[in-house]
Amino acid sequence: MHKQNCVSLSRTLRHHARLLYSTQASRITETFLKPLDAETCISLIKQCKTVQSLKSVHASMLRSHLHLNLFLSTNLIANYASLGSISHAYALFSVFSSSSSDVFLWNVMIRGFVDLGFYDRAIFTYKQMLELGISPDNYTFPFVIKACGCVCDFELGVKLHQHVVEHGYDTDVFVGNSLVAMYGKCGRFKVARQVFEKIPEKNVVSWSSMIGAYAQNRCFEEGLSLFARMLDEGIRPHRVSVLNVMACVYRENDADEICRVVRDNKLDLDKSVQNAAMQMYARCRRIDVARGFLIEFVIRIWYLGHP
Image: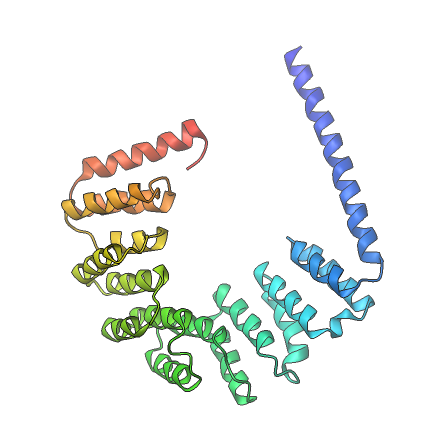
């Protein structure tokens, strides 16, 4: 009897789900068939969570001639890229790139390439942008510098740094953070430190980037020292800064201190932090403590239903 009730309930739920989906699909289709105005269009673009739904909005834009609106098309490009469809994003970008000097358009395409791991394409697009006489801004540099760091091209990094200075963005915190990270990935942690110290108003990302640069280059004592300085200056650590400094720890007393900071800042339930803590104590030859993190992690998955 209980089994029959479960089957009946399951069928009822599936039936209601089909009705709900059908109703929502009808409403969306009805919206797309109507002529769009710019305000509705931008709202629909932001609501799209799949490439298919975004294509439907794109089709409606074509029918309403809104594809000629650079701002709307740029947002469409951004959403195609964010949904992983770099081919659709680039095809649409190519329509405007030869005739548009709008830096927002170029920034969106460069960011799309970087976010999806097409670092060489991002760098090529940046060079193409310069050839067309389009000046980069403080939104361009963080992404192209990140691409440079990911391919570990130090010489290009130096040129980009020169471009940053020439365009007057050497005091911009976001640009500075990206330079610190780039130099760290290229193995030039001393240059990274020079850039870090020149950032006038450092944020937590600035500190995290520099600590990460030290960790990547096995300058563990420097990383731990900088983390201590960060705390002394009243900067509250976040997930990335904690992960970066944990990679610098090889002594048990340092590990205990970092874990205290983690608990004080309520980061102890973060899955990545727990994994890093486990590896940190294993490096300190405290396998018993590392095992405790593993057991706690397994219990949370099986009994509490989440990692």
